[in-house]
Length: 364
Ligand code: SF4
Image (tube, helix red, strand yellow):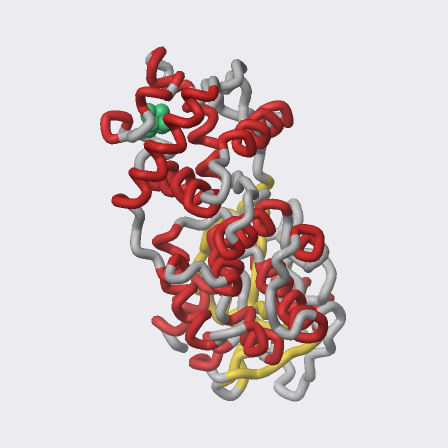
């Protein structure tokens, strides 16, 4: 890829900054670009669109208006405010970082790259976003929107998943940064990717830098970015039991290691080859909880896609065959019998959220 000339660079800077001045969206984290607000919004916006993030961000800021309020909150409350955004490790890292900031930085976010990178969950991208947007330092920010814009603008001939694409994008992003205006320029690039240079159907006639765009100039915008080879996702069949007793429902907390650590769930597990979901459920509840259960009826089958696997979740109402039996926790770390309306107080993996809505809509 040819390096853009100094004239092209300066035209891109000028046109993008002036477009951003007049076309940017009014977003809550843009008010004053305060470090805490920038940090939380950037973490929430990773792999999630602005429209989805807005209500989460508002609820978060009402409950956790500053760093000490995150540090002091019980973990379940933090996770509950993250429920639905996925990637719960990010919420846990926010709390770990908040506690370090309170303990070591007087509750402030440091304005130093190395110090930021030592904090849990703050990678190069988030550190650069905080430093450029909130501290006015010259760091380029390269997110998914920026990568797509660059792949088209500079006609990058390889998939974005390849290391050489990222290297060129990072180098070009750094060389394109207007000194002293990195925050606005980074925001302008990301905003262009979100509003104009969209993944499907980019609006080239409205683009402020269409004159500088190489793919537009050669008519190959639809071929950029070059698609990455598709990753296969593993299908997973799971059976879970909504175990009821005296109007309450049994829920348990997953162990700290492994998938979706410390989230709450209904007991159950993988359906093995040759098993029906009902047989799997009876077996799993015996293995997991040492209780024998009878199945009362099927609630439904729900499908949910995570990043690397798809779940087909078969859910059943069930009851203890021996009313006096007490579940023994063999893998979960905590368990409760809760009223159905209390289910929404606990953080569950996304697939269970759909199931809870179904239970509350059709109580037994
Ligand atoms: S001209 Fe089209 S493809 Fe090029 S940067 Fe603008 S919107 Fe994207």
